[in-house]
Length: 480
Image 1: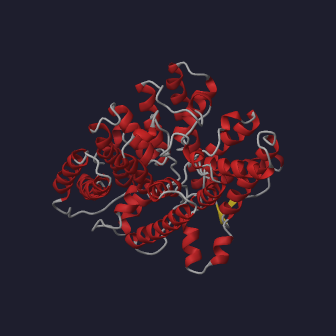
Image 2 (image 1 turned 45 degrees about the vertical axis):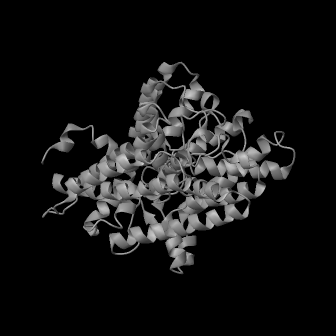
Image 3 (image 1 turned 180 degrees about the vertical axis):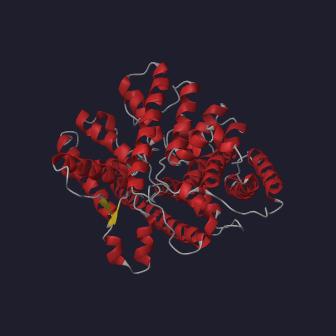
């Protein structure tokens, strides 16, 4: 275990965190809010700790898979702590449990909230919630790798541990350049979205924060009734389109920029992703046709909610709790599917679902024809035994954690559907649940135990189980 390298990278990221916290501090100055000290305290502490941890470069810079996973887990936990401090110190969120829940919900792009009156927050506190979305969407360490001096090919283990999905690769030969390409594409798409929202009449501050939530597929709204507040078909359509775009593997955007359009269009995962979205919209439009006054309103709200749920953004344009049970169940299924690998979306990922489906079909064929030879292929490549075993193990651990979380949250005496959706929305990084935690509700009624369970689920879901799980395994910390 290369503890020195882990500590050095933690120090480098803490220094970057101190710089990032300056941005909401500037917002506080712009809006003349008297809460400067609540940002200055975590800025100074994180800067000092960062300098202490990274003052000397380790001679051994090797990062193996284990170091990469542990670094990612510790960074997300520690940075969430420092970003929660302004919310807690200012007493705009009086409970540290609630402040940490809200911050982790931001960084993991979940979008679940404990706030009953979101509009009561100051501009700077609203900004830090949504800005956490934007940084966490592409990845805290992917952002940091652009600046860490030791970032090279060995840092691929860090990127693999943080970028969601079963298949992760480099865009170019240098990790630092890969991180920069990802963030340039990410920032450009976010900027375009901000402009389009402003063009639709949304105030600049609102446009910026809602763009952060859409880009990170996070969905922490700045209004109590989310995007429904703006009551604009134009805004709904723009956000719908961009939620779908941010749920696509960013490698495909790079291929389009590199003028490799045909290669990008051949993506099997993209085809299934769009097919699932189209099928879900059609099914719900038919089932919920009596809810809306005309077909345009039907399509507008159904496509918005389908896109919001499959990309795990969690924004709402209408109260979907009033929809028929079939429609709500379709949305619940979309929570589990999620977006594409290598996107900012959560969930199990379309690639895993497709491979699992093909594995099932392949097993049926082998049962019917024991002597036949067949293989599972995905993206024109064979899904070897190692990949299939990895996906099966991931699903098994996922289900175990899901059941354990259900048992804990059930102690709060909510109905089964509410409990199930609460766990589903946290571990899949979606945002709203159903019934007690639906479109017009929040998670403030949960006990502290349930809130910490959901917080852990949010981290587990965003980092895809293993980084967080390794922290609790004793053998992780042994030298050999």
